Length: 492
Figure (cartoon, helix red, strand yellow):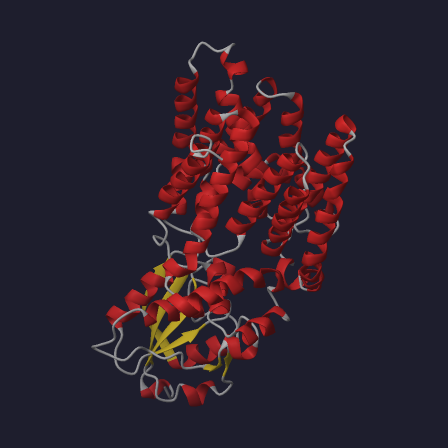
């Protein structure tokens, strides 16, 4: 690829790197990233033990982070940088796809559109595997479209490798192969080129590589996706906005994608439409029987959508019926997309709708006294690793860091994502005059406003012997300072 042809890829990569990178650590680690932190700080043996219990399909991503954490430590930058780089590369690949389909200008605009879409920016600074799935699903589609036109053996080998990596980093993203089969069928119908049959061993090899993850994921489906609902017509109607994290952006991109019909050759348009619609049909169809559709799983659909939108904005065939020059039209429409995305863009840089355990750690640090201890409520398993992570980053000069007094075994030792606690609460808390009770905020997971009114034997014991001194709420999490009641009302 010469320098001029590489401009769209470079622009897409650089824009996403800058747009998402400056806010890389502005939001603390969220619910799901708590699981990532817990997994990435284990030994390889402990990680594989976890995989036999839960999160088997995410283990390849955990292995990537495990290696980085072992070398560079467990800072938020280290945990999130792989996602940022993967998403930036994915935006660059999207731009290259746009260049090959609709020309240089379309490629540049497609790359720019990626950095405008709130969900792509969100997952660019989230320590989860979605950015990797976006990258490899898009790259596999690019390689397929190249191979069906010039079907050489090495192109099919590269395609098969990227397809396998797509499934390795996220199984639902592997549904893109359904669209690839449709594209191959269209190519065979038109050309009858026997070299297209080389795609079959490439696809077969990729599926063989991913088969163990499919098997393990099938066995863990209930424990991981029991909360997923069966899709309805509303699922389809709201899909563009749900996947983009902004209805205004999602529906405008869809409108532009539809209008690209007059901007592209029929074959190219049909291929890109297949990359969007066929995976949706496949996953929604499966979800009618075994629910697996979650909007964030579909972010790989945004790459062909961005390319179609860019083609509609920039191609000469559209310019011929438009009074606006191509550059003016591109700047105007991308500007509208930027404007429409601003509320969601601002939101994803302020909150992940999860407990702000970084601020919680600071509040504990500022108000802690000698002898303080930390106790976690039910439903706080993900807060445990992130709060400990942020507490460990602080300097404890004026007092000792409050210990996790009830933890008997770490989550790594139990082989799960939850630590084991001592049953003897009374013995463990015998000398605790002040307790920092950590858990979801009021209303989250049905948590009552009164932190000592929640069900469960642990809270019942605390309610009999302690009272609330101060409550600190940070996003969807809460740190409550409990102090022992007077000796006359019972032992502390």
